[in-house]
Length: 349
Ligand SMILES: *Cc1c(COP(=O)(O)O)cnc(C)c1O
Image 1: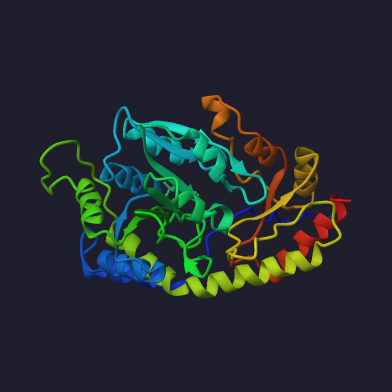
Image 2 (image 1 turned 45 degrees about the horizontal axis):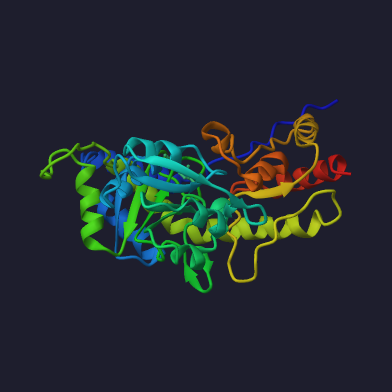
């Protein structure tokens, strides 16, 4: 038997342009603070269509600062979906507030407005709305709940919901530029807002030498080398999204007959296909059969948060039982894509 190389579940997409941008930054001698961070902030704010951005060291740091800028602290509650990256839970906890976990709509994997409404209390100070896997959440009913929304664009930078880019409905939005996100700076994040006062408050909280009257300060700044990578990547976002659309279109056409439910976006919103998530039965078994064929397919969420915190979230439980994410990223070659399809056709029968 010929040994097949493993196709990884995710992979960054980098080129000589990013390497040159880092080398230029190092040669300039300005690696701490310079002109690249503000240029990267302007580029991302421009793509999303908001007033400005504050670049930081991670998505988790961005969320921490966004919540602090909104005044979230001890005795407050912040609503977030159960089926999401654990970073959100930690960012809320870092403010001293209590994370209150709500269920998702199992069709879209996004925060269910009805469940969020049930979790509202007098202590609710914010609602975190991730647009999971590349699909915008149902923002309209969430906006009507009252507390300010913090949109999480880590999977869904610039996708449109009813003709408008995500990231503009809430008071603030955050983004992550970790290695395998839509675009990367290695590690990195950004706070986005059209509310200048809130944005500058968040920015100041992430730099210890800007004096604020009271409270803790953090050192969360992004480096110039990271921003140099980010500027190149921001310029490639369109190319990356086009490749993701092409791969998703291919999967949707060629996987039509397999025993799985395929992702179908509601008609009022775009899907950026940060993840291509199938719903399957016998998930663990299918995952290991794919692995034998050299395909790394993963549960896209490590563990729903309510499994730690308690509470009932049947939608998140169902997603956890059946959601299997297959390789989709701009650097996936046509040959690799064909191998993924071939393996899925053999396994999901
Ligand atoms: C990755 C991710 C984060 C955290 O970002 P880091 O840069 O890893 O801290 C937050 N939310 C979502 C939805 C993510 O995927």
